[in-house]
Image (cartoon, rainbow over all chains, first blue to last red; front, side):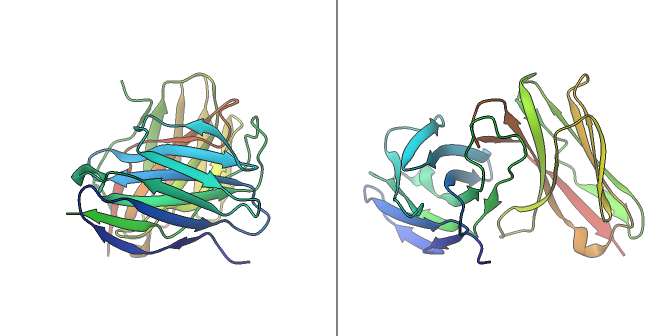
Length: 117
Length: 112
């Protein structure tokens, strides 16, 4: 079974631009989450989508947004890029979408490394 | 106080020895606990998870959970140089869906 696929792997953008990252979850997984990883802040939760609905959001500005399609694929968008947005963006999928699921691990993709200059 | 805390290391371990990694968490609503391994420049890879008090073994890895003490640990037996990586502890809180809160990670160095 194919793992979580993220595209592109690398991106270089300039300040003020916007960027869209894509994620295809493991087949059958309906929950998709996005995380930002930086050396200073570590891994931080951005948002989670399940059945095309955002059901959880982290503490990030509104410049960060996302969506999920009917086939569970997800995209995240960052508008008006800032230097501090340079990070590894990770997508993770999970089989169980139940809010009370406690035994449903997240499986991460290879990530998109975004550099803002 | 951070929600999930880990010693950043590096934890230096001789090859063949046991590496012991610790993680504490502050939210008593925490329900399940995950250990991920992350090699430099790579994405996190799930090692194992635990949600009941006690020990859970998977190959050379053992996770230990003590909810009363809000403490979870990971033991790596017969450590190999290929185990050299950063180990991330992550916590899932009841009714928070699939949101994971991560610790800062412990860097492990296994020396031949």
